[in-house]
Image 1 (cartoon, rainbow, N blue to C red):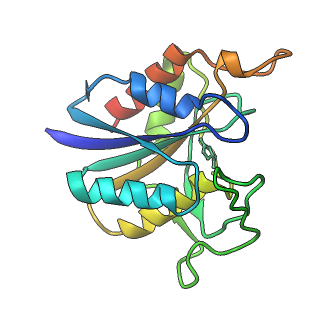
Image 2: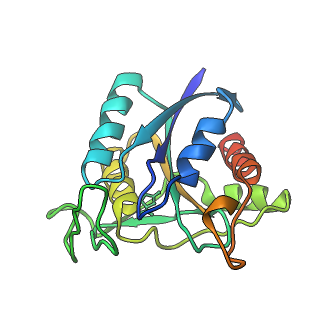
Length: 195
Ligand code: PCA
C-alpha cells in the first residue's frame, strides 16, 4: 500500500489548539489506497523541517502533505507555491523572528507544489465545502518547510503539498470565520482521495 506522511503543527501565536493538528489526528488510518502516517511538528523554523525530513527518511512516503492553520482565511486553501523567503509576522514558538531572509542562499526563488491542487479544490468544492487555491503560503514556518521539502524532492517521485485550514469554532469570537472540525477532516479526506 502507498504511504502518505501528513503533518499538523503544535499551537502557536497564543492559541491553545491548532486546527491542523486536530484534523490530522482525526483522519482515518487508511484513506483512498494510502496508509496514513501522522506526525506532530513544532512551530519552529528549521526544527519543523528536520522533524519531517527525519520521519520521511524513516518511512519513505509516496506523498507528503503539510497542514497548517491560516486563521482569518475563509476556506480550505491548498497552496500552489513555496517561496525562498523567511519573514516572520510573529516570533515562532522558540522566539525566532527572521526578517526578509532567504531560506536557502543558493536556492531557486520558488517551487510549485507537486500535488494536483486544481483537482483537489474542485472535488472539495463539489461537496459544498469552501475551498480555494492559494498563491501564497506566507513567509512563516509553513512556507519554510514547504520550500525545503519541495527542494529536497524536486525531480523525484515523492509528491509534496501544503494545505492551510481556517480556525476552528472554539478559536473565534464576534462572527469571525471558522470551520467545524468534521468539515476540515472531510475536506482533507477528499484531498487525499483525489491523489
Ligand atoms: N501555521 C503557520 C505555522 C504553523 C501553522 O499552523 C504558518 O502558516 O506558517
